[in-house]
Image (cartoon, rainbow, N blue to C red; front, side, top):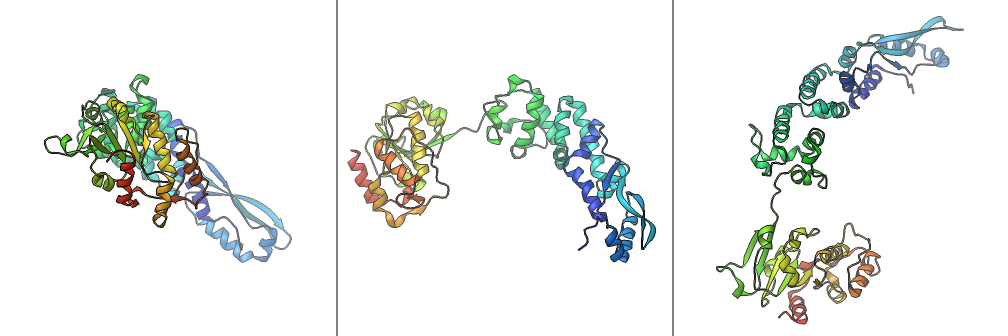
Length: 391
């Protein structure tokens, strides 16, 4: 099978310099990409003898190509006599290269975008050189992106919600969709004191640049009728508001499943919190919880124990509920499989919990066991609450 360079191979070679940003970067820094010499894979002397007509057709295809020239080499062949063969394609200019890959219009658009950006924010030129295709990919939205950038630069660490950025044609969804790109540019153009570097990624955008984050809502339900507030038992409050509550409760239960939260049995002087997996900073703000007797009810799997371990980093005295070997074995027919078990060391488990966690993470009972909390029978739940002195 012939492996000789084709016009498409030449286009692909130029396209590679477009795809890696080299051609657009050269527009900014003046480092020439062109003229570009592209060596050709060509027939050897044996192939010229055995496939002479095919070689002639190959040469004809190359000479018919546009936007590049051919570099030739003469040779003497004992059968064919004196001939010449193309050994390289020469793309003489940037315009020829862009025409070859159909990017003339895109390059012209980039020039305009780059000129506007570099004129307004010269500090962004090195970033622009590294990410030229990113700018081009967002060409349609670039005026709005620049308008948001301008607003934040004029109002560093504004202490408002993203919704309150007052830019015509820009809504919160637009900003949230482009947080990654905006963040890259803001890190360059804002002064260091306007950036809180402990927050990273799209999820940390608001706090990194001094916006108000969406407040964390803590949902809780009173398990004792006498605690209800104006007859309401199922309530939600921001973490700041929750931290300021004064409630006549003695016990707090935390569960990760909404149905369990809603169906949790009545318990005197108690409430149940609807948990949110990993992360308990929002609860740690409520110092009054430290004086409560807290129970955590999670899935019996490796991540359930990891969440329990993390909760104890905020509330060291927390008890586990229904996360024991007896509960696991009693519900053997309801076991599922944990998709991505963890195996890291957990330092805050008590001995019985640690022993069960080890059996789970090392697959001593069965591979990747998971007993979801909502599969535990409620008669078993009632019995556990009695055993914990809560009924």
